[in-house]
Amino acid sequence: SISNLVWSTDSGILIALSSSGAARYNGSDLEKIDTFSFNEPAAVYAASPDGKTLAFSSDSYNIYLADASQTTNAITIYSPDMAGTTDFAPDGSSLLTTSLDNWLVTLWDVNTGDVKVSLSGFETAAPVYNARFGADGNHIIWIARATVQLQDIATQEMGPAVSHEDFVSGVALAPDGSQLATAAAATINGEFMPAVFLWNAADRKSVV
Image (cartoon, rainbow, N blue to C red; front, side, top):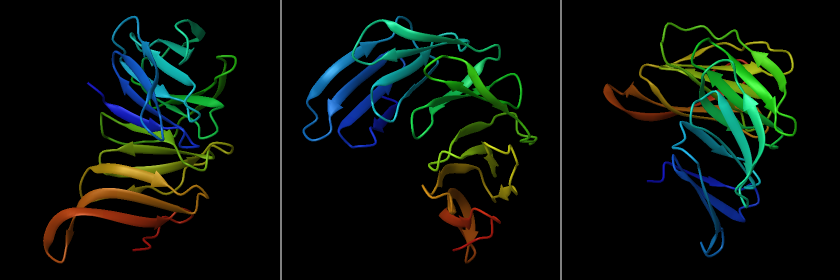
């Protein structure tokens, strides 16, 4: 079954991802372009912003970057830490992997498979966390239960933590990096309900 849908940045291609593979469709009429089957059920997978490259792994250590229109693997990335999730940078130049062994994010060069930088500094008591690229391409968004924190990739500086009353179910950083949106249940006017919050990215003060 399909677990994720990804639009290419030009809206020309829609990619449907699952643990068994991917299918690409024309964005205008949903006519199928091609399909790509993984050799084994994938534990982690992602599609590049241009819709041309698939990242997938069945063992969470050997991550393959493949041309979605072909059946051969282009590049193999070996992660010494078991990868939890993957994410492509907005410009497609880097692949992010989280570690299931440490509080660690690694950015890989998609052209060579080499490590570009490893990022740490996020601290939480939660046993499960996630991380992804911000839409500006300059920040990593760390998420663990009710906590969200931005990290500048270039300086590796951690911003202030943003805490919520309940688990965070969604996050999005504005493309210009100025505002952070988060979704989590909260008590509003005495009633506990789903809510969306908007924060100034620089100081994490609530906007609305």
